[in-house]
Image 1 (spheres, helix red, strand yellow):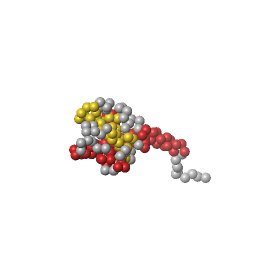
Image 2 (cartoon, helix red, strand yellow; image 1 turned 120 degrees about the vertical axis):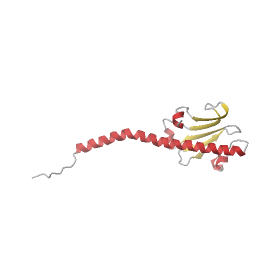
Image 3 (cartoon, one colour; image 1 turned 180 degrees about the vertical axis):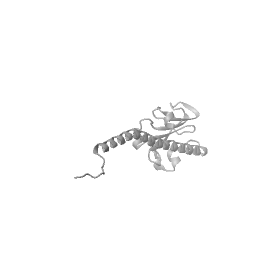
Image 4 (cartoon, one colour; image 1 turned 30 degrees about the horizontal axis):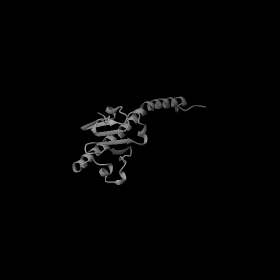
Amino acid sequence: MRRSGTRGFTLLELMIVLVVIAIIVAFAMPSLLEQVRKSKRAEAVRVLGEFQLREERWRAENPTYGSLDNLTGSAAASTNFNSSLNNYTVSISGNTGSAYVITATRKNDLANDPKCADFVIRYGSLCDGTATAGVISQCMSDSNNVAYCWRK
């Protein structure tokens, strides 16, 4: 019996290709996941900037900085406000005539982000809470990687 000239792939060749693909994926996946986290962190920076502008607009017409329900126009948001992509919960505390603290708390898969904790903007105080009039501080809840997370 005669064999035809066409041949397929051997099992060994297919296994080698699968191993090569697995190695490529093993190196590429952590980088891909970090890029996804970075894009989600950008949402926190955007949302905090938006609330910072809302605070300044509110303060221009009122004697104190606004609470969350003042800024969102909703009494339902008096404790927390979810960001548009639902990766962060925004809360406001310490709103007086000269200071406020806006915090973006991580949710979902970002809750276990190994590099960046919750984002915090403090107006009128330093990251350690020291009152300093007119200072805006960009902080992290655990004070690590501030420059990396805020992309300074």
